[in-house]
Image (cartoon, rainbow, N blue to C red):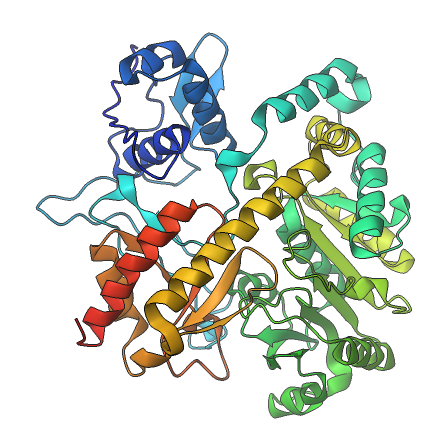
Length: 510
């Protein structure tokens, strides 16, 4: 089969790099169904000649698309569009002027009785845009993949395969590579003040697997899991698949309102002694971005210790902070074995790496290991060895330093643009850390978030409503989770300008 011709047009005066434009347009072709699973793409040299760019631009774009799982490459068969997961279906363009994409599959509630529960509100994507190749997407949680040092990562992979022995290529230890666990121990000690022995660190297939194992291990029928409100819908799905009752407790500017836990649990018909797990994001609460204060941290640890509960600390944006003052991790406190710390490399490196970890109190190591052994046996050892080399060589801290500077610039441009256009009619939280901010349009009170989403989409901007993350007290004004890491400053400026027009139109002001 010959290669598929790619209909790509590059804007050499645009804000995005040529490499990013290639990535965006190939992705759009795949999502629209014009490129289908198994289609062969032009060789890098051929496409570079077609577009009049350096071959390096195409090579790096293809590498990033492979890292995102959009493309795949095998020696002798060229670069192809990756196959869909089992049961998936390609998006195909609809007839007529308007186009609609396929709805992303969302898991059903784990039990029929959960369907009407406000805790179970799966996220639905905004409408597919009319110009998918030029989307200004303020999606949260996506790092600046175009800035990832692919060449240096390839070197670490080469080193890992060069050293690979039978143990590395076979079924490695379920707890993870000893080399990587030692590097993680050093990382969390230096950056988060968590003093953990390597033997207390378990490597997982991303942070989500760590959460899933902890739920299986710690809670059962009749138990209670306390979560923050607001919180991520995926988190509710993970906990909702257990037999425990899930109780939301509100957060404020100081984090989880620990003093409210008992009353909230009783209001749900349970005894506080039934609480087995408390989930928190103290360093950058999701989605508000609030940072848990020191008094709240101490109060939570005391509360959990007195009731025999475990605190699950999800430090999902642990490396990126933009203030001089930075509190250490909750797990750095003297917690007397009550805190489990979970981290991931998905946001700091790239999501397709799928390597996370859990730092456990000694008494939880063997139960955790037993469940991981049964559920997936191992996390690929060569990838772990490559990551260990990437960290040990100094490439990881250099990358974090570069990304922090880049994200600081992009965050500053986003905040400046929002205040320039909306002035006192916008409220922003979460700007101290992480890769997103929570934006409330106080001047648009009464306007449904969906109306702003629709009008923004018509202008080529994708934004994400925040109300679905709230159970107890949804925001009174339209509020959005705005990610900025993957957009250049020029694209951020353009996106906010177009979003402003959408908000003004939705409110009846021109």
